[in-house]
Image 1 (cartoon, helix red, strand yellow):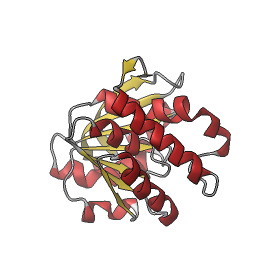
Image 2: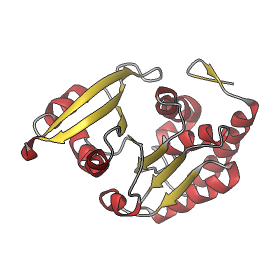
Image 3: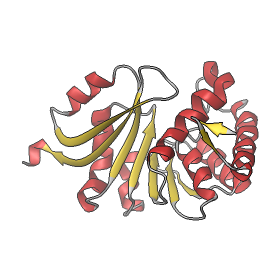
Image 4: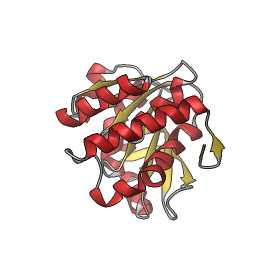
Length: 207
């Protein structure tokens, strides 16, 4: 099995297939993703999510905000399982979705834990981590507000955000309030979309 041209092991493929079966079961009763995209599970969601791990594959501690149906955080946690190192803190305030994620972790052996809290309170519960991810959650400016506490305490902290074709507007808006280094990674799944890699975040109002 290949994800974005990279071969994954049989063990990882088996974990992903377990997750897919679990997802399909739960998606019939709770809204894990937009119904119109459920039939594109592997390409639209799994492969797209895997890009985050593939951009930064060394084992680390992640915080995934607004984990929802598990994208990208659960995919990162499943890919980390084979290495036996690294961890993903899945932050999801919806209790039903949090229950789905907890069950998915048990069934797949993913390296993750679930925090049924709001994104803005996550730094109080997850004080230390190396990187952040979020997909289809909020405007870049708000994501940077969520990420700022970890940037303040961890100099090498990185954030990886999936963004659609309107990403340039979001970047321009965010730069009105924030200074940051940026790498734009072209999506291998969605033409015109990107993954924004943010580092060295600082508030302009604090300068």
